[in-house]
Image (cartoon, rainbow, N blue to C red; front, top):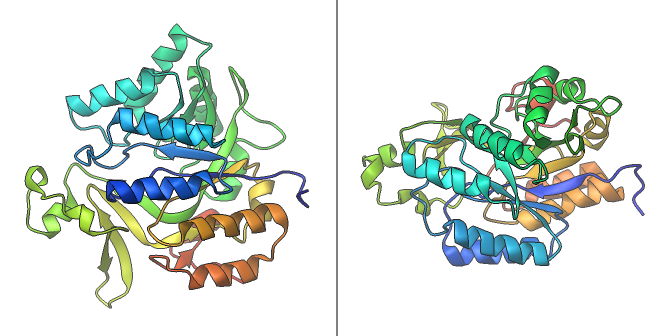
Length: 317
């Protein structure tokens, strides 16, 4: 039995890096045996990373579902070609698994599909969709949304005002549930230009797939040699890892139903386990955070955005 009134769900966010196919399969085999309840699958950065097509993601989704996981298929936050738009439509229009909308184009397709068949599964509002107030969440709920991933830079107090636990926004299938980004490098921006290719003095269309060389992205340092940003193809990330391991009380007070953990190449499953132990089973947050800091993670731990501070602010004891 959990010592808390409400268990916080654990979601494994979409893989943001290009790992070898065998490494991806091994990773999700570990996730299948983990405490995660929901897994988000799909290519969310660059369509040139084509080791996995939609049929491959669907097969993996079925395996994870058989292992007891709830699976969501994600669409890209930045759609730049007709081919990418066709893929988006294929993902959004299938109804075997729920879909996470990465951008407005996906919202349009999903809203149309929901209007044509209201009995289909509610969709997820992705963290890159601009929902910054209650009116926006109400509007998206009317399109067929059932779950909201808050924009990463929103403070927990703002999340509480948009979808408070005592006055939930209601959609077609009931109250909208809330998820926040709680662990991993923060995806900050997307661009039509591939910065990894540019770093290697290559064009985007002849990039030699150099992002495969960086399992956790390509680290950039500031002028005074401090880790600053990470290049990941067309995506720019924080160098530090957002970590809300010590914020269980604030998460519950904000009405958060689940937290999202973004995959990294080493010790991710242990990080996931630490979140479960602290958030749902009463383990001491300070000791768990000390262990987390000692893991083979690709950056230091921060949590500023959750508390209306600069994103690079480190958690306080």
